[in-house]
Amino acid sequence: MKFKLTTALVACGLAMSTTAALADCGIESGSVRILSNDFEALHVIADAAKTCASDSVEVTSNATTEHKNIQVPALTTNPASYTVPIVATNSIVPLLNEDLIRPLDAYVEKFGQQLLPQQLIKVDGKVMAIAFMANAQHLFYRKDILDEHGIAVPGTYAELIEASKMLKDKGVMEYPLAANFKPGWNLAAEFVNTYLGTGGDFFKAGSAELDIDNANGIKTLETLKAMTDYMSPDYVTYDTNGVKPIWEANELAFATSWGSRASAYIGDDSPAPEIAKATALAAMPALTDGGVPSAALWWDGFTIAKNISDEDAEASFRAMMKGISPQVIAENQELAVWLVDGYEPTPAADGVVANLQGKARPYPMVPYMGLLHTALGDNVIEYLQGSESAEQALDDITAAYNTAAKEAGFLN
Image 1 (tube, one colour):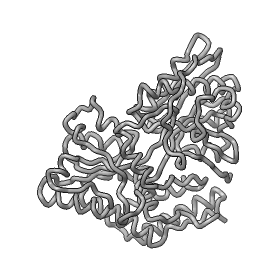
Image 2 (cartoon, rainbow, N blue to C red):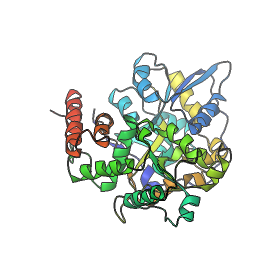
Image 3 (cartoon, rainbow, N blue to C red):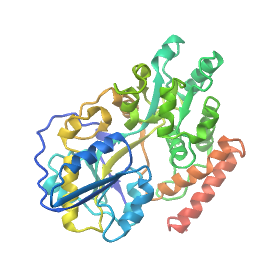
Image 4 (cartoon, rainbow, N blue to C red):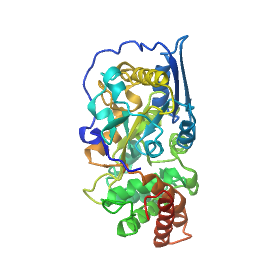
């Protein structure tokens, strides 16, 4: 399936206006079953949706880091196991490809008066998801350590590596840098972030033919490998949840991680309050002076399953309107960069906002991007660990992608 997505999300930036309070849920009956990733901002939304439950309305949720692996089989059954998948820029694609979600235009017209135009994710002219949060990876840094050693906030990878080397050479920290380099989805995301910073495209124009086996691909791999010189040998275990306790243990000066986790790093309830106070956020480094931040811009949102009753679909949409209501967002401003009317950015948004201001590029939303993401996740680590060349890694990535793309019908 090929589709064209239009969204004003990136172009319009953040919504920062005021609005009226939300009305009651108004749901008479139905079952609402939410599947999501597992972090605080999504917990808040699910908990607010659950306030719509009554004797005739069931609202349940499953927050799990395995959500992407669950969603397709769970929505293929009839009725679907979940009525509301919480999706992101990439995870909606398999649901579209398998025709497992329904257009939301009628629900938006009847119950979506609170929504802003940039929240409407349209595919081939139909609203297929409601975005409520912007996200991106960015730089976390220890302001106190940089100030003490006269280090400027790195704006490029060369500066980041030079600063890390200085701290290591001075004996301040043996491994001052961390990033989400765990093979699989996380390492692939790091490649995507860095490659976007080259200005190159992943595919040849108008086709599914891969176009990363070039100087931009080599530059991306070399940049990732240079970072590992200043990362713990355990970097292959690092994902978003794995880096945070190391940061809080005062063992890192720099980390790249998700904006959606920033409030947990700098919040008043941090288990390491002194480190939280010294933590600051910046755009992802660029590859060159004056280049764009090497980060992919993402949206998070929800969609509605196709294989459920119309009653459950309506109940699900209305419960989610409660979950992402301006009232709920106003009470949880610090948890994310919200796209909901009335949001005012907090310090936790500084990194994502800096990426937006630096004109970081969106994560490519084409049907075959997921196949490339998988190929990257399976074939980058051998190069980083020195068992093959960058050229061989790119050959392996290309071969794995081509096989998958041919099986999926994207390539002949």
